[in-house]
Amino acid sequence: MLVKRITIATITILVLFAFLRWGTDYIQARVLNSANQEKAVLIKEINTANKSIARIPKQDGQLTLRLTQLEKVLAEESRAIPASMDSTLVINSILELAKSCSVTVTPLQTNDWSKKGEHYQVYTLQIQVEGSYELIAAFIDRLENELFENLIITSLDISGGLKTGTKPDTANLQLAIYTGN
Image 1 (cartoon, rainbow, N blue to C red):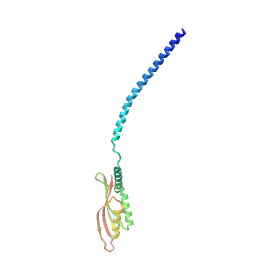
Image 2: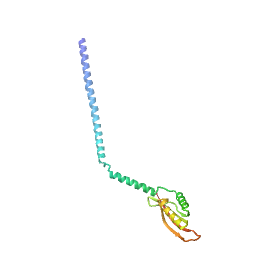
Image 3: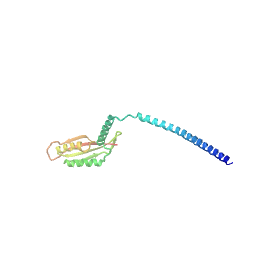
Image 4: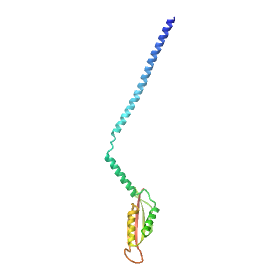
């Protein structure tokens, strides 16, 4: 009887071992097959991304040089037409310049900032400058070349000019200052 029980126990253990082995192989195969499907989808997505990346042109030295040049031009234009300016700053700057040139400036008429086109605004003002002809000429030169790059003299009327006498020479200037929106 003991031999019979040992034989039955051995056969039972062997059968359980066989089921365990086949069962784990089956489970492993199911897991790998499901992973293979996901892996195939991921590989397809990676290949699609690689094809898209391959279509991107390689960086060209000329394009980099051109970009640098355009950025430089943009920076210069930004300085020429600043984003915004305060009208008080404009008038005070003109008065300070007049003081340094030993002339008297009187603002006669100012207009608020008005929109010109889609990309910029303009501030116009009319001033009267009094002093000797040489000092007025020096003031106008510095006004055009030193004060603001975006300042334009749209009208100039000088009276007196090189005449000697007690009455100082005068100049009426119409100015326009441009800024970006």
